[in-house]
Image 1: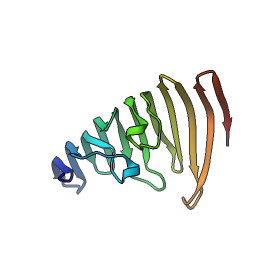
Image 2: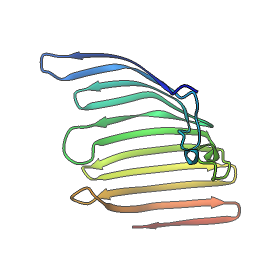
Image 3: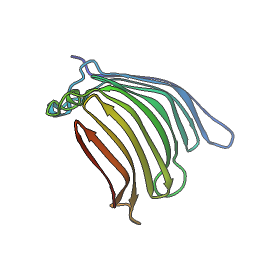
Image 4: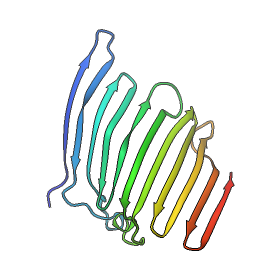
Length: 173
């Protein structure tokens, strides 16, 4: 099959202050999605509206269509400053089948939401509320990089996994 063909429809301008302005729609299609364990990419399509103004990037109406299921949402990214870019992203997940991402995993129908925020130059917060007919996950965590940005510490403020009659919950650093 032919490789995926990106379609980018941007409009770019430069103001007198030499800042870059870009806006448009990005559409990527994969004609042969395949699982990761088969050296493929389990994504059928990516569609998003992009706006770039100097060091600010905004992706809205974003759709990541997987082989089975989808992620929808958007994010704002500030590339200015030192350290980790400032990030705020929110995504809704629907009908995600992990077996279609990697065939060694079991079949799922994951739904829920995922949120990401960077709170400082070295900290990334993330929250997940995910459900499957057989299990659910509720997590609130953050990752803080060390001064050199080469490693860091993961903190689980809240972690709760329910499956059948089992419950696993806690917090950790």
